[in-house]
View 1 (spheres, rainbow, N blue to C red):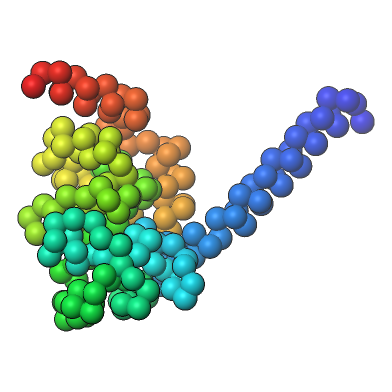
View 2 (cartoon, rainbow, N blue to C red):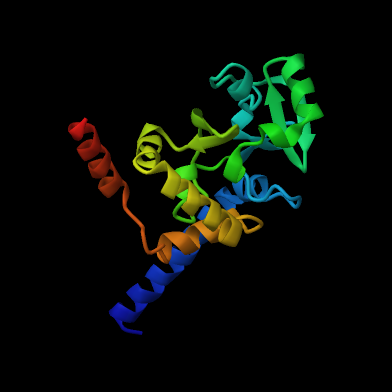
Length: 203
C-alpha cells in the first residue's frame, strides 16, 4: 500500500470516528428536541428529572404576565404533549395547565429568524417578542434585529417553512439539510449584521 493510500485510509477512519463521537455527544439533545408528540421539534434540553425541558426551564407564562424572561423553578412544573415546562410560581403553573396552547412559544421555541430560513436552531430565552398575542424566541439580539428589518416578510417566511418543512421533522436532519441546501433568500450572519448596521445608520 502506498503512503498516499495509507494516509487517505487513515483520514477516512479519523473522519468516521469524529462523526461517531459528535453523534454520541448529540444523542441527549437529539432525544430532547424530538419528542413523539405533536410538539416536534422543540428547543429543549434534558435536565433531570425532565427529559425535554423547554427553553432550559424559562417560565413561558411570565412573558405574557410580566413581559419579561423569568427562569422557572423545579418545584413548579408541568408536562404537555411530552414536553416539560417550569414556572416561577404556582399561579403561573395553574395558568399554563388551564390553557397550555396559549403560552407555547411559536416554532417550537427555536429562533424565529432561523425558522425563516428553514433552520431549527438557537433560541435564547431572554430574547423574545410578543406578536399578535403569540410568543417568538430569538437567538440573540442580532437575530432579533435582523427579524425587525422586515417583520411581516420574515413572519410569513417562518410560518411557511415551519408548516412545510420543520414541523414534525427531526431537528438535526432538517438543520443539516438547510445548512447545506440553503433557501433562495438565505443571508449569512455577516450579511444580516451589515444590513442591520445600515438600517441603524439611516435612523
